[in-house]
Image 1: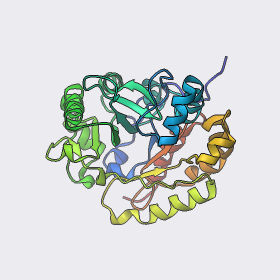
Image 2: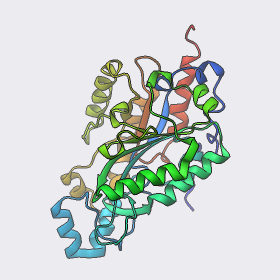
Image 3: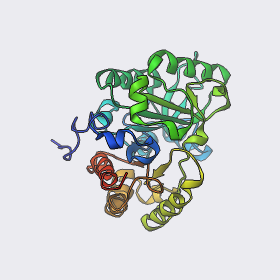
Length: 319
């Protein structure tokens, strides 16, 4: 039986609520927060149609080879091995979300997506809400940044669903600098939703995407990735926003071809993880430092614990 590395479990389930008062009084944009990339792809449905986020030649291949092609796609689509609850228990507090309707399905149901269709969004949100109801001092960032096959009705359905599920836990859009854990606890806010689509304009609890930039390196080379992360962090101070450092490597078509049977986890991530984690361990949060850091396969290392511990560096600073 495969065992999970140390650090996975509920060891970090209450890490925000356990921070010293010096840190809970700091703007949240200055704290180090662990996140996951393509957060809810731990299960995908090989019998469902290929997602509308895929290029035409991928859709053609999947049509021609059906389940066999989709099983190869699963190897490249699944970037997280942990369920929603397991990621939250492990300390993950930022979720990168891509959603879609099923074009062939009647009604307005929305699904998490990365190549193949995954879980219904409503199920995922209920699981997050259940965790937050048990851990009243924990706060999550939900970043809805890609939408596929969604018309105006789908967006209204999803925005209403977010408001119905989280209710008074939703934080109103305001100045990023004013958001501290102390402020959120006082207001009983636990969810900050970023909705990168005009449908959410004018809705107080939907934050615009420009308040959480997440520059993407789009490379398979770890050294290029770390250079990119350094450059974008230097530019961060101008933005007056939260900031996501995406410590992820992106497979290209020829990478998929070479690693066809191994998949993303074996071919790209595990080989380069030491380089990526060395960069993460060398970071410091604060005014010009890291804020949210995302990674693929957050179960492969003590990723969340490493990011959370970076906050200790802020304790040694003079007030």
